[in-house]
Image (cartoon, rainbow, N blue to C red; front, side):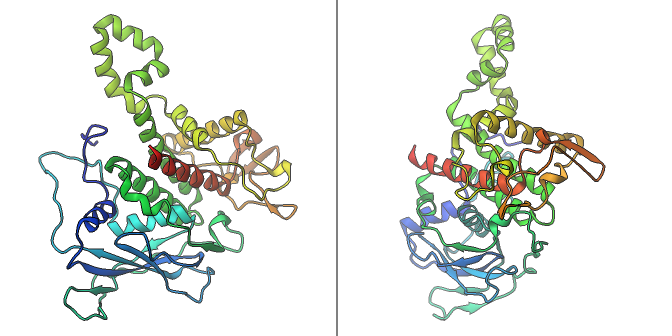
Length: 379
């Protein structure tokens, strides 16, 4: 459990810190190249307005038919060990389990809506060294494991042609404060991992998608609501008991401790509804659509969060019908399972408990996170 209080100064994610330093002075820096693997057909590249970073298209022959080395990430980095934070106590506020290269791949995965994984450095350009660079493989692990999928993918949204986006969001990464930047990286990493396993482990992909939203929602709530306000909304009777037993100071101290655990479902739903995108531009017939009506969407999100809680605390995976490829409905992809009820692998679910398929929730998750990303740049 991190001991860093919310809003305290932190070093921030590595990609963010590296860019900050590069903006100040980048003379004599190393340049390294890293392979990025995807099963999407990526067109275009990003080589400008990203500070020390470039995404170069390797133009693979696979054209999105299988996972292939599709992009080269070129990164400028300084020599030396870098900054080392104080080490007197545990502090995991900036920890997400990945490297700077993983951060950059995750951000691009989120912005483009594609599966994307990074390999290790394959070439380094040393200061005063060979201008053609030096190939290297001492860090090289096996290539990322190919996701299992068929001609009927669970998340077809991420397949096919994906043009490189304008670097509008990405290019403004260093405009964020350190706390916002690290939460953005954490949500991107969860989304990235959810996509990577969506074909082989869709039940786990659901959990990670929900966690990506929850991570951003928790940060958003902390930024917009004081702990006492949250306790007052979530537990009004408890507020009165705390005030009567110890006064306002007692209320504030208890609220600080309880804040992360209050109103989890409401926080999740409020965040999604705040940043909910418009429905997809191409939709199936009405009987195969997920309702975007606010009341119905809140009901669907509540069901999804309930499935998440059952999976984490009761060992009951997300319903199988929500983890299968979307069916074709008059030539279009259905947004939810079809039928009044479903029975599969020992489980029975009625229609109301199957609000949407993973492909639909991926669309919502990605666009909610992108709209939130835009909002923290506007603050």
